[in-house]
Image (cartoon, rainbow, N blue to C red; front, side, top):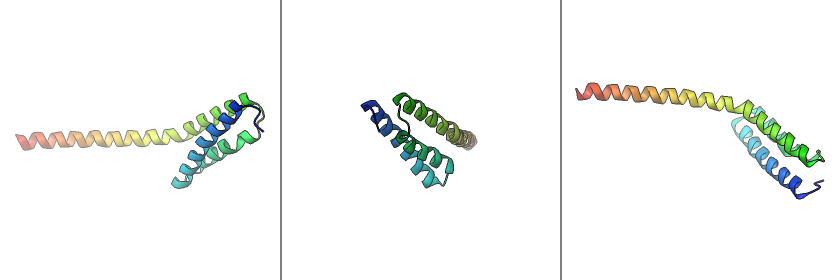
Length: 99
């Protein structure tokens, strides 16, 4: 199954990332992280070459990031905009209250 220690390490590494992605998707009821997580956990058992394990694992991790990170960055941008507006409102209220 695993021809050398580096293949075993890759399997454990990508399997752990896949498990975390799968559990996150399950908790948040998001099917895309669950699919990528399941693929990351399962594919090393069917790929015989070490370089292919690393290549496919990196591609799946990049796919997971490309699919899920835009949603996180959008939420972050919205929260940052709300925080800036709250700070501006606070400073305006402090300025008018002090005057």
